[in-house]
Length: 143
Image (cartoon, rainbow, N blue to C red; front, side, top):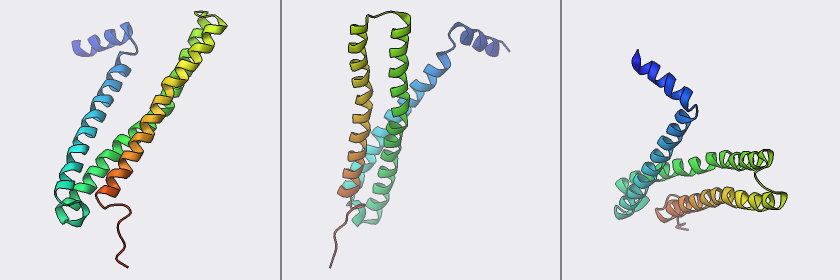
């Protein structure tokens, strides 16, 4: 019972603590899956890629693992754009900046959000690279 009451008190003290912990866990899990996927993809290449049975299975597993990180970066996009929007709104409504400073803050926050777009594009292109490199996508024609 004390654990539950401690959690309630902790959440009252900082209502966003649970959300932060969830985000940190998701980020750690994403980094772990990304690391494992690269390891599996390299092992698939060493085993001959899609040209061999074992290499093909490893290649498929590696692509699926890496695809989860790509989906994670895609799902993160609206969250990051909303965070930038809310930050700008807070700065504006709180009167923390002059109109000129707000224009600069808007540019910086938009640039920060665009880094997540770049991360998604990079992840997608890397996924396509590995799929082609391992023979799972765009294979040769024997015609």
